[in-house]
Image (cartoon, rainbow, N blue to C red; front, side, top):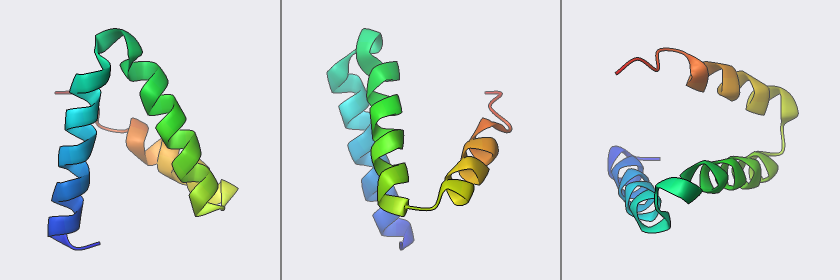
Length: 59
């Protein structure tokens, strides 16, 4: 993905998070993560990315 592709994905994600509302954001993100994990098709890599995503979450 190019930086422009990443920006487009970020924009779509931000807009969708706003659209689904606070009460459904967690469910949406869980569903999205599982769908993308299925598309990736590599359990070990998905687990590695989960660990990476959990790091440095401080604002």
